[in-house]
Image 1: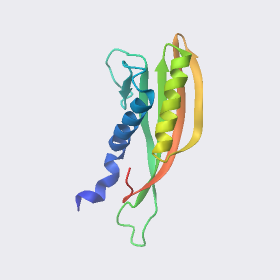
Image 2: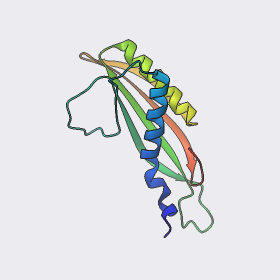
Image 3: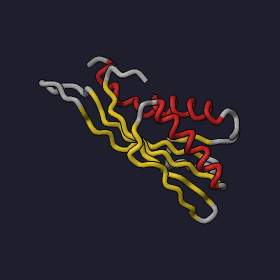
Image 4: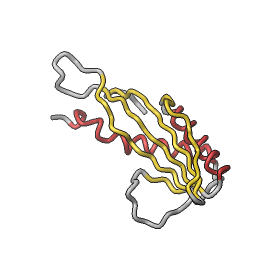
Length: 136
């Protein structure tokens, strides 16, 4: 088995890295203390604002006739932005939407904003088919 046969196992980390760089570039230093995570089970003290990047269960796409390798996956990413201020939540989420669109994702679930006690948060979902030979 070549190293490339398991290409899909690294997608979450690769996408997270590109996403974070693009969001920070868009915000251009406006939120110096922003926290990015892709671990919803983090036991560290809560830091706000925080952007949670979650990979939802990928689905295989694009089988070949012999079906011996994974040629493509339908990747779904859920982004949740947490903050103390509604304005900050929306500003950061707008940067997140822009970052995901620049990575060529569709937006099947535009941001929904809620409040839970003093925490304001927004949740959005993004989807894209990624093939083995795609470049991000």
